[in-house]
Image (cartoon, rainbow, N blue to C red; front, side, top):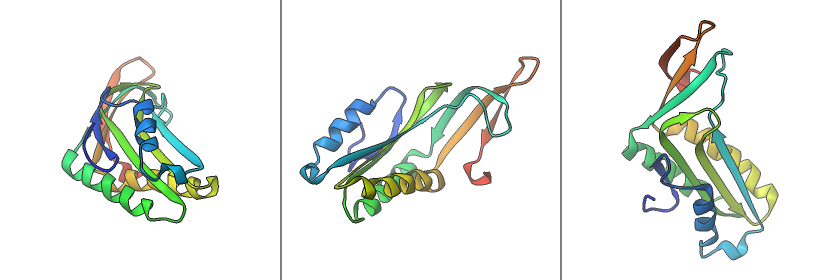
Length: 153
């Protein structure tokens, strides 16, 4: 796992959700937490156009993506009632249903964590240099692939 304050891009299989929850619990301020909120992004089997997704390939400009994820987490940790924020995005090849990203927010109360969890998800999608290639099949079962831009959505 990348050294740092709890964010980064990792090769598929390098981290588990359980590892990351334990890492949040190791935060010296965790005694102030009354809740942990978790978002797990997974590969959807259908894209926005209704086409069948067979798999995804995720790449990143790792240095810049790590900087963006760390910055987002650092800024969100400064919000009222927040103890920790972590964003860990996986890269590699993924089948439908597999985990792609883990966002974890620990806070003093549930009403603090949910807005921060949502903001963390929206921000990493906009700010981190992550690139997604979709492999889709048509009615005949032929597979084509293309790079998807989150910014076009």
